[in-house]
Picture (cartoon, helix red, strand yellow):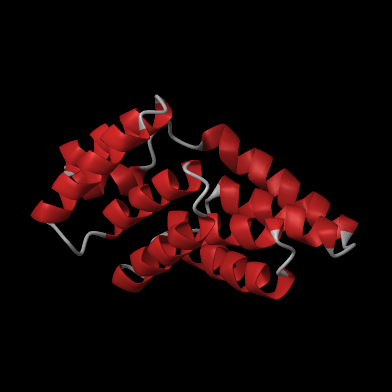
Length: 148
């Protein structure tokens, strides 16, 4: 499962979306309920410009694993782009609560607060994000343990 998932990520980075989707199909054969597979599939849908399917996939990933903060952050980003601020705030509150050391979550939270006009709190979030990013591992620990 981890190999197919990793291969899909590589193909996605290379822009080979068809090959990435083929890897996802193989991963789903092994584990049709793996949240990370739905997360990666959603990234591919986004790359194809199919935001609606991406949203469905991110939601499915969260449904399968409520601690899938990566999907939560992606949904927050998508909803932020479409100015659905209430949804963004809910997703970011959840992400920060579940993974308080996520520099991405704090950065997105800062963007949200900046959009809402709370520049002082936004600055605090950005500083927290920078501080956490400096000590973040290259590969997140939660990802390593999940795939060993």
